Image (cartoon, rainbow, N blue to C red; front, side, top):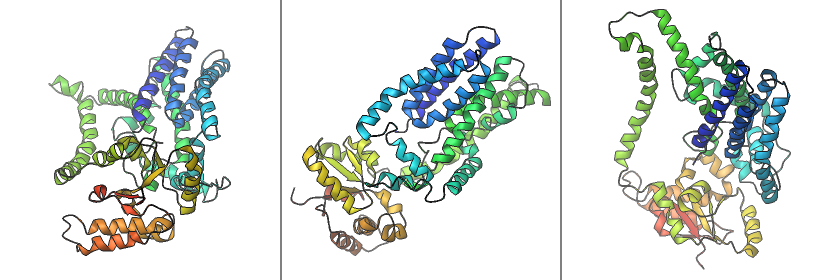
Length: 424
């Protein structure tokens, strides 16, 4: 469900137009039309993910100094960019009260509290942007990117060699100039990711972060890296009677080294797949809501993206406090969008006991801990006693303050606990 593939297409297309504009400038032709086409692509890119504004800022700044007339081109790019994104900003203002929409709260999450805490807080204190060590968070995120730059660039051997290619004077002027455009876009992107974070650890989610836009630069950086490899290979002058080695040996080496991490990461997945081939996948389990929950109802859950994606139903991220949820329920009574229940997924099982009992999840501890204990004692588990199932249900039954206290048995066997109102 991440937008990176669409972003990769739009970014690459926009960079193609920018490259053609650089080429036109080198041939003393007018580059304005090509730059405007590139700006349209970057505008659509920003609609795909607001983090794309950062590389566009670098592009505009560098364009102001490179293209003639200086300054006017950058201003024109800004105008077209704003024309594209302003309708959506107005829509955000109408629906959420802020032109940035949820991106505004993402900013608070990156600079102050954890992003999950921000999105799950009903009454948000907007003065907490520097509350939990802004400087240390930026430094930590920057070091995280620096240490993981190889994996962020797809573990492709040639991609990091782009930075070495910056030192090489390419003969074609458009190739030599365009590498600085890439760098000018990448540096602001790194700054943006340092401010807003690129780690899914706070969400307990594996896989790429939605803010991870290093991958947009992979094709371009890889192209320059391969060019640098070709130059170095020719300078080494390895003699061979086999043309495929003497001419393209560097390509085979780069492909082999880039493939190894992917192959190694696939092996554990194959083992897990064989072991769990008989179990229902998350998509199959969550699709239950598309059949059993009315379209007008809202599902409260710790994983709203799964319900929205697989179940095709409106979902609300479980608030951190019961009082907030009760307040939300009062406001929705007159909107004919009742809550169907509270869904707790296996995602909550990964949270620490300290977090469950004393921190963010303390008000939901009975149903989360009860779910974990009940799941440990259910099914074909030969480690924990079957009595744990009853113990877990006893903890769940101690949950008070909300009408949702009956477990839907159709989901509990898959470690998904859906708490509903027994009177409905």
